[in-house]
Figure 1: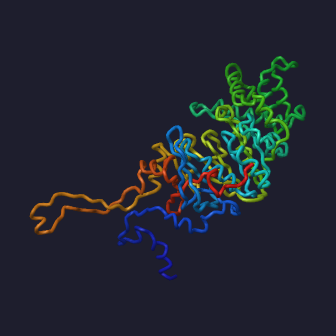
Figure 2: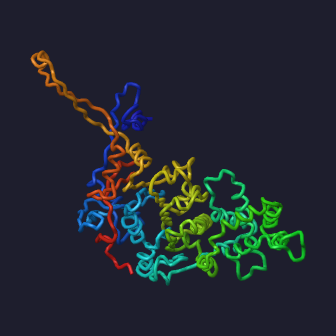
Figure 3: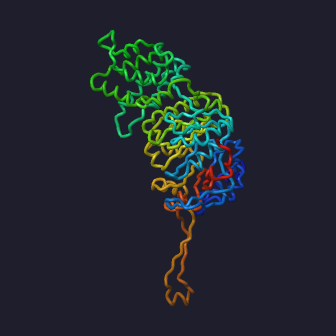
Length: 517
């Protein structure tokens, strides 16, 4: 074989090509905005987004300044510019500090730019995303639109799109061989682990019993017409009610022990749960009820009972699903939020037919989900199953706390990482290291002696070449701040030079000037 073909593998490496090679110093630099704008694969037609590119921002836009706000800040926004997006089939990461404008510059923009063929599952902490874009996706794009909003935080404009979610219905079409495993996924979402408690006994026991209850409600004839999580909660509340025909047993215990559903799974769960005695039984019963306590709210029961959306439509159809949770209810509704994401991800894995582009999961306030095994699996494997996770954090420490052993797997599996408005040390240090080092010139001066001036014409000025971080942590904080006068953001893509784009607010840009209601 031609020797040149072997050498070609090494020829462009900066250092270490062979034993005598004198390498170059690290030389990282930002891609020029003109090159970004000229790259066809990065340019984006917001109004005709056939490739389902994820909108990132613009380059070459003009920053417009508004009137000073009462708090002293000067509002700025970008007009014009070249829209930039990526059609990467890997996951996406966004790190933006609180009140950094991620909704206006990223979430809203992509809920408008994503084509009808792209299903979207959106965690909407305030209901503002549904209020602004649900009607657009339903009426203008003609996409099936569903809003899960127990507390009505998205306002009256979404009333026509309000739907219900009944995950027990998904068990009805499940065969005996997998119904137990599917029920385990439901209970895994409902049981929110307490990270401060090291003993998993109580959560594990609750998870097992809840999954048994789910199979029982889905299969037992007594629950025909009310096969839903509300019934599961009612049974958990009545778990210690005595059996009127047996003084030594509980009514639910007797009913479950007589069941063969799930190949004996229901009976096994009942045996494990009711074999506990004394304080352990009381504590386990209390723990189960605590994990299901959010169902006690009337508004929640209403959304869990009745005709349900079909989560398989996220993959085999075209669905825009908004999960609206008011900020003050976030802790109460964490189990419900986890349930929605778990149900949709499981449906995408089980469904073989794919209708359009990858389904987008816009996971705003990602840390609010708590540790969820299905997310850990999805970030590593689901990109090949038609799912793109968009993990949105306020800072890197949020994901490190949830997944201390695997957080780098999350970061390693994102095809694009964009960030702005950061302030914490952990995130800034991480980004500085990711940017690498650049060549710098350092000068120094000293007063030369008379002899040096006469004989060597020395001026006392010296300079040397060295390397420094492309951007130090404090520089990243300053140049990509929320109130940066140029509205810059940092974008990192594996295999490409780091990029600086401008944040573009959907409500201030002509690129998004379309009828939304």
